[in-house]
Image 1 (cartoon, rainbow, N blue to C red):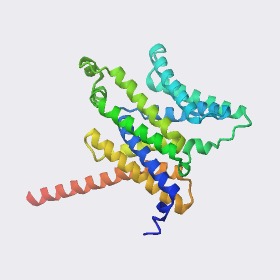
Image 2: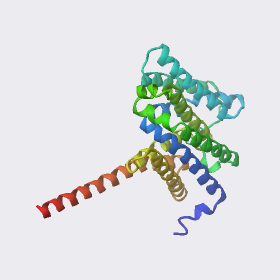
Image 3: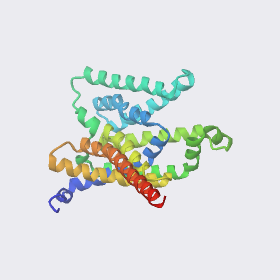
Image 4: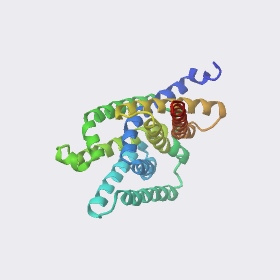
Length: 285
């Protein structure tokens, strides 16, 4: 057992675990709303739509996270403009800008022979190389995310249940929606440099879906999602270390796998419970 856990005695693995745990907390909170409101496509579009900004920032020699922030903000603004003025549905607007952003990023990369950033690093990051400043940034974002989620909880719930009712109650559903989009953008941008865009999407969706099988209240779902996400990071790091696989990709796979495992266990327990009830009815009849 000790040999299995030996990786966690290494400093950079400990830092990777802390980094992943902070990402899990952020994504546990934000991902719960993403799942409840059906905003998964938006989260994926934000994650992949950062590519043009990352490419341009890399070529200009400025921090890629700044380019990612500008690109994600542009994506959010563009979606709003297309919905209001183009009279397009949300998924159509997101799909158009998603593909356009990816295409533009590939164009920028292909047009420059000096682009040195590995595409794998963009998609999955390098969590084992997380620096202390990455941990600090994620800690700040985690605090901001929790504070916004607590202060905006009533409005977020009202908007999720009935937007017209939220409007009648004076809860400003449009503002609440903007705040939710802002939280998604913040989570994706803050976590990108440490863990990559695909891992962010995996951590947003997998643990939140898994937690939703067992928790009935939104705060409980967020807490459970954060715990499942942290466990996914730890398990992914162990598998990566012993199997020699890419850490980010392994963590993303485990995070998504947690949803499938949760569904299977829940179905099994439900079947066993139904069987016991039927047997009890038959004995008493």
